[in-house]
Length: 283
Image (cartoon, rainbow, N blue to C red; front, top):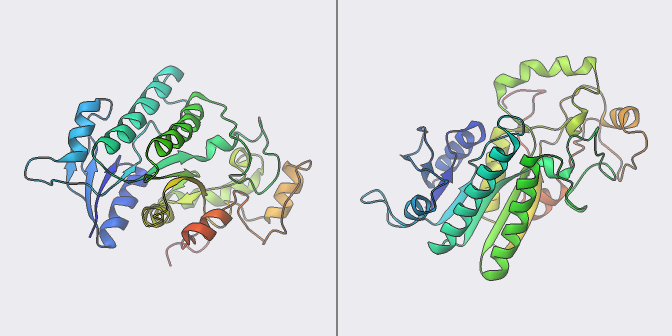
């Protein structure tokens, strides 16, 4: 059993991650302002001292944390003024990374974002499809800029400590089963969801990716696009790409509904394979 601290464990993705880690035999501590399925420590993550304390020991609750999953953030652009979003997310992430280092924690998995790929793609199309981790980041918002700089920051933390494993998961648009009722409506306009190449991630598959990232074990920084294996659309992926992004090269022959946010690297290195899809609901 590992004891894993999850920041933001009460959020949309966080709830699924906490439950998934518990179901797989881990002890989980939720660091958040709201309760979850795991024991919760009310922590102000913008206060470095509180984060250090929470990742080292809390009285009779625990005396050691084995790994950190950092999900807490303002979750999207446009929810707060730009500077407030940037300031909160970059500061909180620095605090978590630095406090984990102070506590001697060697495994950190955190939520990066599909937005670093250049979203919205109507503004900055990727150089090719499916979009992957191989081309340079293209942040287009204060939110995305912070996510990009978090990846750069993690690279330096790993340089400072070559025994550290840090994995950034570039999650696509997080969905729960209740959200799937809206999906058939997307077919009416293929441009409506082209901003992220029609991608999504079921929160339960996002949780699987977190678990597999925690088990990866190789020192250094890795980033992975984490999306579902299909798109939000009923139409074929090839026809969508041809209509909406006619000038972009398509690097591979696409299966009928294959994701245009490539998960090949996550499949290859993490053993990640999505189990859920809006087309069939819960297996």
